[in-house]
Length: 160
Figure 1 (cartoon, rainbow, N blue to C red):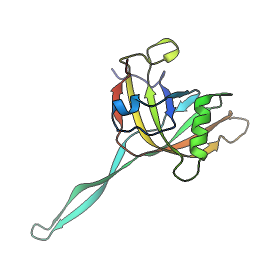
Figure 2 (spheres, rainbow, N blue to C red):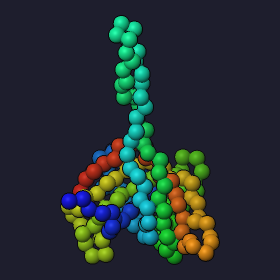
Figure 3 (cartoon, rainbow, N blue to C red):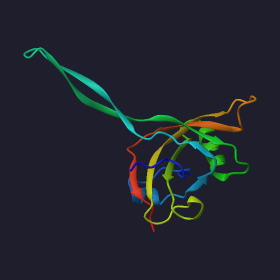
């Protein structure tokens, strides 16, 4: 049975892992970002390389270089939330200073806190394009931010 995304939480680390594996991500310091409404869409897409063959008259495709997805996450504003402040700081940083990591987990503990063995997704990349949600009579206070993934997603479990 397929489950929903209800109950998933997002954590941010203001650093990149030493290695792109569960141990590398587990060594980072994580801060929960409350008020998540839309999670970033993790994944990698590849370029297509066409290879023509004059003998057969057919052009075959092969997989080229991969690139991490660049997607938007949205949050409702939560006053004095440390995770939201970290995301805003990373997104608004200049140059290469926006690099960071995310952890998405559907925790089974109290208040959806992750406990050992819960499934976790890790990704590293950079945050950019912090934009406040436009104010009108049908919106709420909050923001969107983009996360550009720079390595493969790591599927793991919450460490003990």
